[in-house]
Amino acid sequence: MTDGRTPGFDIGRLLAVRGAERYELHARYLNHQLPRMLHTIGFDKVYERAEGAYFWDADGLDYLDMLAGFGVMGLGRHHPVVRQALHDVLDASLADLTRFDCPPLPGLLAEKLLTYAPHLDRVFFGNSGTEAVETALKFARRATGRSRVLYCTHAFHGLTTGSLSVNGEDGFRDGFGPLLPDTAVPLGDLGALERELRRGDVAGFVVEPIQGKGVHAAPPGFLRAAQELLHRHKALLIADEVQTGIGRTGDFFAYQHESGVEPDLVCVAKALSGGYVPVGATLGKDWIFKKVYSSMDRVLVHSASFGSNAQAMAAGLAVLSVMEDENVVARARETGERLRSRLAALVDKYELLHEVRGRGLMIGIEFGRPKSMALRTRWAMLQAARKGLFAQMVVAPLLQRHRILTQVSGDHLEVIKLIPPLIIGEREADRFVDAFTAVMDDAHNGGGLMWDFGRTLVKQAVAGH
Image (cartoon, rainbow, N blue to C red; front, side, top):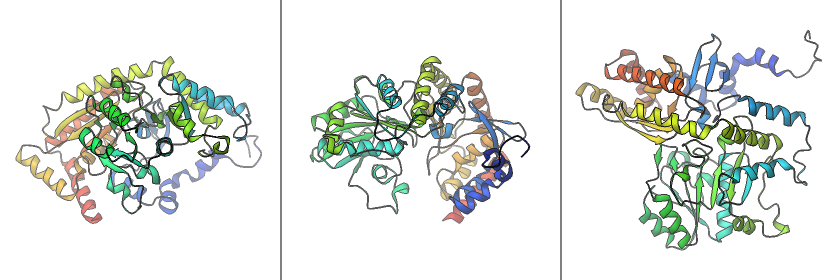
């Protein structure tokens, strides 16, 4: 080799030689439907590098990221502070994951994380959002001595078997049963919640303060009232903050928008990772942890092989430091309010635009049936083939014409969800609003390219049936 290295593994060389095979490799060895889907909707791009809220392709064109890896990239990609923390912890050559010592980084991250939820006392670290939910489900059952967990219709809490049991969408559950005997109640329906609690077998109620699927917020006062009902029936409130936490909604946790809400267990992941090392955390009250780890015999009754690893803990500590030093939560709240208000002002202008909702930088844009005959006919064509195709028609030109990456908020939904990096500002908000306005103008003016793409989606949907 000419660069002075000894022969051996070289990730840069491997990518240079084999990187162009990316779609073929996925089709052959991984989920074969992913490249097929990306080709169909025109998302089969090749991004060469990324920084902050942007990607760049081989031609040097920039793409604005309004998806943030489904919320993982809260600080954007390759934040220098998080990146340096990982270099530093690797260079330290720590004796990591010995399993029989107490390294300082997990304790330091737990201590810092709990300052944002001062009513809670302890933390379990795992590796993902679904693992954080699995932990909460187990802890709730052990702490209460009960088996059943309540959840909301249309909820999403993960895809492993326990969290799938509290997933409110049949499309994710079909074919994977039998699952745990848990029960769904509508978000905001206190009557349904109380009826289930009266049966006396409920361990807890797991809820997203704002549902990721569709971006529906719990009604004002619901979480506080649900908490009172649960505690009256000796059950626990579990807040799933995997997507809504770490500043996403303009408070550190989304449950903090409602006064007096103090969940017994809180699930965290995604943005805590800094986008580098998977990490999940379950925060809880001292008495719950002491019920789980009730004796030395039970010291390993719940654990994770890679939980609390040094790289993940360093990333989490760096993320929380950046959140404070750069005032990220307040910035996300202010930018989100401006972006949401500008988009909401377009509802009266476009008959296909039904509602804009959300908090902070978690925004849902919902489309609905238009009034005019020409648009209604086209809308009906899409709906007859598959609900959700119009939202996909909007997402596609945002990427292909305006180089903005976003996506629909769930299958069969006419809703686009914006969950950009929390570090975006006025420039990025302006770029999105300008592009979205251009796409909506095109849709309402009968733009040929957009509706031609709609016909392609219809054909694919019909073929898929």
